[in-house]
Image (cartoon, rainbow, N blue to C red; front, side, top):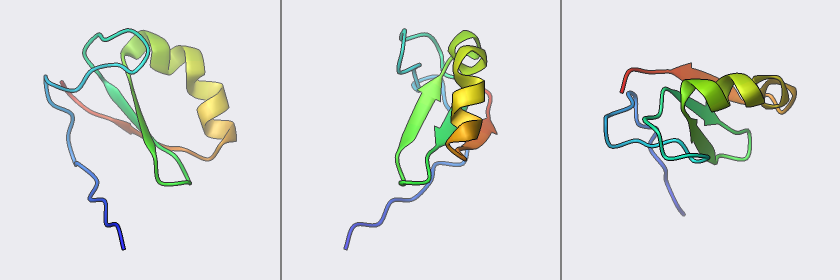
Length: 61
């Protein structure tokens, strides 16, 4: 059995999955995966993430 622990806060080492900028948002998908986004890409994909019922967590990098 694989156990994944959610990281509570974003750090300076966390990078946007789209462009590599500092991550400001973590989107945890219902399937258990996660995506990290900078502010720009979080806003760009926000509607689709909500449609997918992603848990959107804002952090400080």
